[in-house]
Image (cartoon, rainbow, N blue to C red; front, side):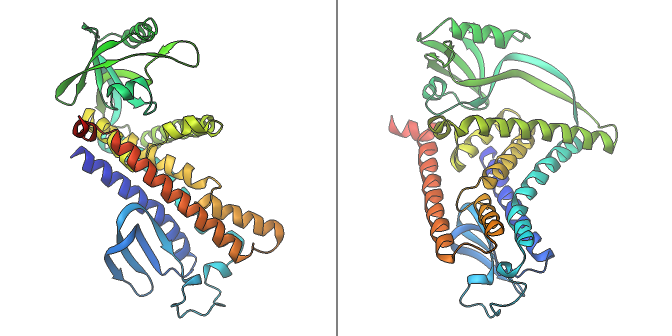
Length: 363
């Protein structure tokens, strides 16, 4: 159930992103001949008056197709409503609309959360500490089998009590046990799991296991005090999450080895989302907003085959007064697409091999 819910979240975010491109084009009267969710063979399609709507076999993304370079299109190449014949500003709106749609959607997710679930009013501490993030698949925690959504309830047989200083005491215990095996008891859903983790020396010279920790709490909610409070709280949550995400990307850009271990593919995202949802289904709201913001930031990066790469071409065109030759643009975009698909396959294989189900098959 939780896995299906997370997959549905990812599919929805892809639809939102592509719908941003689609609506930005159609509202400007620009011709659009394809709207597809996924890649590869078509599983279902509907031919509208101008646009073919399709769902394809591999749900790793989607695309909005334009008839500009379609040899079967009956639209004259000089038609002013072809995307390539529009001014740079019009094309920039279409290209950046997917990113904007994801950011707006993230904000609306918080609006729905505070409207439907309510506004957090009180937090009741429960025994243990919650793991919202495993820092990388090479960390001691990941190697031991600790997963997102696990609650650490005991260390070396000593229970972690429901107290405000529990996290700090647990961190201190880890730091005092460098390279010494520690037996942890985890609560994963309705069952308990025993693992052994060996802390390693981190960059700051202190022992770490490579996880984030937050208090294990149950939250009481109240009805919002009007629409203004909902929109205000949603804006605060969105701003905080957006800034933290940007800062996280900025810290990774200069460290490619760390980036490779931190970036998750579709399988990893589904696994993390399912783990959080299993702990508390309400966490799907901030999880959805977080993934939507991440999708926006990744797409705006100036890399080939991404929206940011196409915007970079427009900037060059504006500076030169004319676009780059079609052959150069095609070669760059095709190379970027191959690299992007290769990265996607690598992440899927890597994240799949980290799943408990897969590792149990190897034992």
